[in-house]
Image (cartoon, rainbow, N blue to C red):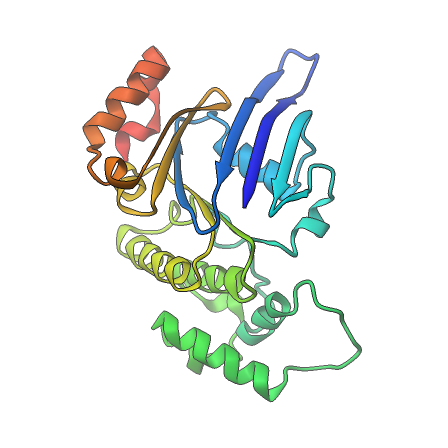
Length: 264
């Protein structure tokens, strides 16, 4: 479903602030893989998602999505095949628009547009049933402005919008990091439910090692722009947080002592 081959990316090349973000990154995802991604600050996790999304051009390498080379595609062209949820609940939705209007934008992504105005009866029923699945009462507030929602409600809505049109690949960039623990747990449960129900190929970045072990069928650890550990199946299920800490400590050395992964 996704193949990253020898991806390299350097920011501020030739300056005092030069930073090699991705250093010969290689990754292959099979159809239906749910991969959790962990690593320290600056490991290249979010940069990897940005390269896949086309936010920045890659310096070297190749990105294949469903057997199509998208390496040089612009961001808007890739958006048709990707769903993405960011760390900030304020991103991914339009605060001044109604819940149903936000959902309509997401639902019509990649489709031909017409001058027809408004939301059809069929769309309204579809959105109502989808919101009902969230169990947040939003199905009765479809005309409310998104800006009035709490962070957790907004993030749950963003997750739903990202998967309304089944994407080839779902990208989750620490999408619960800004939420309180109780709300984060609910959004993660929704994530697992939606991914399993639609069998979505998913990459999820997290700093929480327990979540990284519990969710998905595969776990990868990044450091200095490349993958240093890749585990799946029963081996992943039997992992302990202490083992992950040990492996990360071996790779990161002294840098590990100051990394916020210790707090997760």
